[in-house]
Image 1 (tube, rainbow, N blue to C red):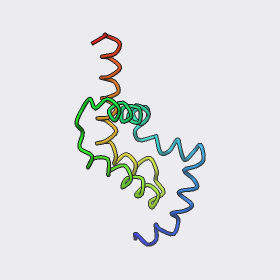
Image 2: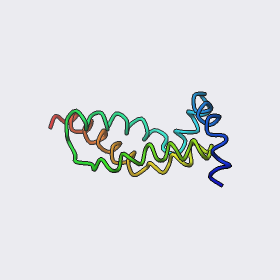
Image 3: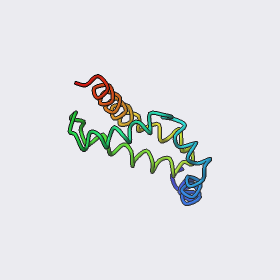
Image 4: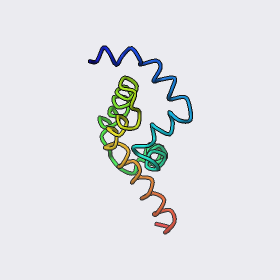
Length: 101
């Protein structure tokens, strides 16, 4: 089964470079994906929270599974244990900056 999916790997990668592919990829996490990227950057610069780096391995693993299966959004949703905490880092940081603390 894995071998049958690997034949379309490069087709799936090239599909990701289209608007439809990007939409399909973010479909599982929606707005949280953008917030997580910014939250990762904020946490990397400010060292606000200690989130285990092992969680970050879920992102390339879920991307690889998305490329192999061709179902970008559904498979990339496997990275939600990383996306949600980093989204909350950004939201927390933004709220603290607005309140002045």
